[in-house]
Image 1 (tube, rainbow, N blue to C red):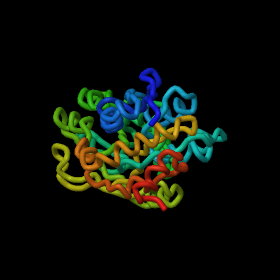
Image 2: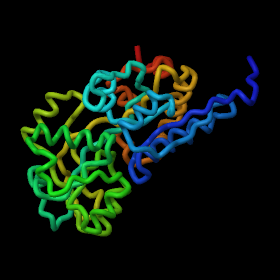
Image 3: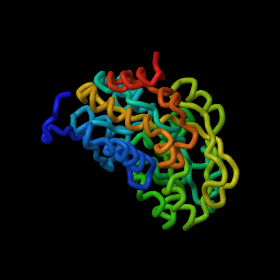
Length: 304
């Protein structure tokens, strides 16, 4: 076997999202598993808190990040040159695996009386920081529902980590958050103010899903957050780990192998992973698989 000189280590970085969301601990969980093997693989993994999905795709494109966690709808748009990537498709963008479902969640103050999506008119609502998948999905829902940004009393652009405090301090009436559940973000909000998770359902959601096949209906489970004991209908996407053609087959293969060989351990690292299976890692991918990922999934008998 070839001996590899110590200095030839390969450093990889995973772009995530805000530190109170689910992307950041997911990136940390992946790096922890990858780094267990660093002696043998010579691959060192680190994680970076970022502005979210659109930001991650752009930094991967610019070779500033090697991997990123991105909503499946944003992956689709980047691959096809649509939405935030209108006329600027990124053919080098490749899927590594789909990790867990993310649901568009409308978190509101109970005293704001926002009982359905249409009740956001005239209210102070945070849509998400510019360049986040959060904002992109909220605006797609608005367009399908005939709601304009100007219908809001205030359209916020706070980062995910700033939203619970703004809700508690009565600076906003509610916020949209595309996230895996449970999340510390909404737990924080619900311990300091009476919050309501508002249902997102109706013909507008049905037509949105028909138009964009990467969306699917789901429920925010009941009992996760104070005062919200019932399951709440909404829709969502998958959180997908993506990379670029420029990243080595070896690095991508190592990441997939580290997760699959420690799958039970991985599933215990965050409650959002409780329902995932090895098979579900290949569902909801809207960019082609990277060769390194393909290689491991084939070896594991998950891909023909």
